[in-house]
Image (cartoon, rainbow, N blue to C red; front, side):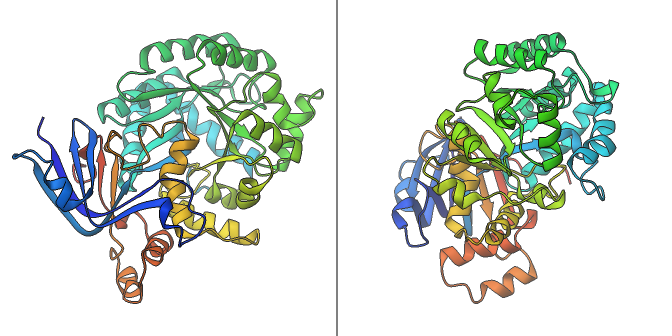
Length: 437
């Protein structure tokens, strides 16, 4: 297969950057090269050095002066909610009952599911995201549609059929047994097919009966290599209702703990209102708290205490996510812009290198896929985003006074959106420019 040689300013992270001067935390080349072959990065470094390793017929693409980074990773999104994004006036439980559940009933129609899956993946790629951890609807057909579309694009995505057998309309309910059976069938059909990863997906404790949570536990025990994703401690009314449904539980986290759902591949969306005991339980199990700033602000859910969770004696593993459609944008740049503000409201600051670490390597580590994505290391899958800090008139004006890489990254985070994403490579294939306009 012909190889591709990309040229541009390359940036990839080795670890969490403590400060803007923590240069050993990242690898930056002002004139960098990436050699791609068979969907992977086979060489990275200074362009002059990488060029020597390219075959004679290599396709050369010059992206200078733009930045090349690992593709962005979104750790929590609901693909069936594309047509409820920007719905007015509800908090979490009202949002679900008024907007989400009626919308998700449409996904028993396989054609509808395939259309929305296609549009969803178009949208995330357009915004520079190459991997998403997605919730499908309760219908097996919706997960089949998502995985089929993802597989056709050769994307590394994580997804699962939602399990929910109570406290929702009939059109979005399964049973404990059918959720188990459908999940087993989907795992057999899709997990490990190409770059697809299955996530066991009980929506949350309110919509899964004890019997269904037992089935989720059984699936996790039978498939210990799979992810598990759900929601936790997003909103005070949700917490109160959960404890009403589970009166013997010490707290909300204890419900999931009781059913064996904590662990290093367990992703808990939101985690805003955790007690210290709950945070300790997540930390001790290696579970992941997923920060969804645009959603938390839009639904009025609360402020995720990012820096405190990172620094506590038992720190939390943290990922960041759009949470579309409660979240208000498909862009991980916009997500971290709002994340910066949430963190500032908690009296802390996040430096721009930390933001871009989180979008790339940080989320890959949290999703336990850093050996495949999230870096520009040789051997990694060639998922790459090309960023233009001069993409809009406002950005071009502001960059006249930008003097450092940190300032450029912060400009991209603060003013950037899909227009700043010049190209996206998925497994080495140019994906954004290939889209039909």
